[in-house]
Amino acid sequence: MQILQVWLIQRTLIIILIAAWLVACSNTTNEAKGLKDSLRVQETGDNSQLPRASSTRERTPFPVAETLAMPRMTQTNTPTLPAMYFTPSPEAQDLVPTPSPRHVREYCSPLEGHTLKDLQEILTNPFNPPPPGKDTGHHGVDFAYYRRGNRPSILGVPVHAVMAGRVAAAIQNRIPYGNMVIIETPHSALSEELIALLNISNGRSLYLLYAHMNEKPTVELGDWVTCGQALGEVGNTPKGWSSDPHLHLEGRIGPADAVFRGMAYYDTGATLEEMENYRLWRMSGEFTLFDPMVLLTFGLNTPAAERD
Image 1 (spheres, rainbow, N blue to C red):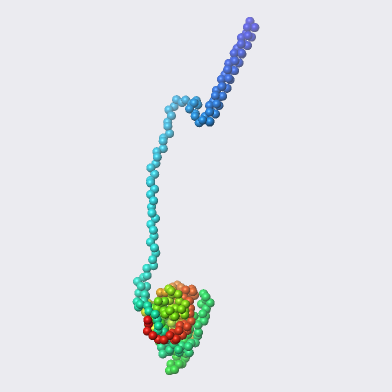
Image 2 (cartoon, helix red, strand yellow):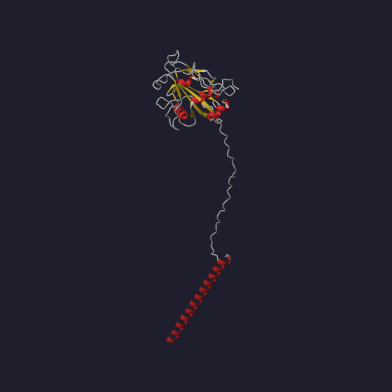
């Protein structure tokens, strides 16, 4: 009986071992097949033969994104800005001289009753130009005397225009020129001889400044004056800046059509425009100095004649 029980136990154990071995072999075969399929998918990209997990739940597909209708980009042409033009004000238009330019052949003495030849005798302070950009020296020439002929003084002698031209400034009693006038003679009105003498390039004009007159100028900004026309009288303005009655005559070559509505030395009573015009006239280099005696001597040696 005992031998039979032992045999049954041994047989059962053998059956269990065989079953366990078969299960192990089956798992090994499946793993090998799965590995082989994975390798094939990696090589070919075909996963249709792979086992798929089943599910009893209904799959809900992801919504397909609708194509958004993007607004069509249209090219917008950038508007072209119009060219900028400087439109002169009506007041500035009135300053344009109306007479047709002719070559100036007439040169007049700046002092009534005194010829161009007399001026050398009453020159009291000659031209002494400053270094470039500086405001030193003497920018023109001075004419004065205490007694000459029947006149006890030069005070009150009428001041005349040396050349015909347009009034570019008519200023009343401002530092340092006092009552003064600036006359512009355009390039088109200058003789070829004078242009060559003073080296005046096209587009630039000849300017003469008459300073320290006794009263306000007798001409106005924009007026066209003739040679020998009265501008005022010799004076001693402004007070405290001019030592004795005299005429200060100053000559410069500068840009055409300049207008100076005001001009004054830097002080608390001067406006920004007056100070800027002072700098522009005297120190900017745009208006270059020349010795007025060169012009007066040229006029003295030019026979008086009508304009051609």
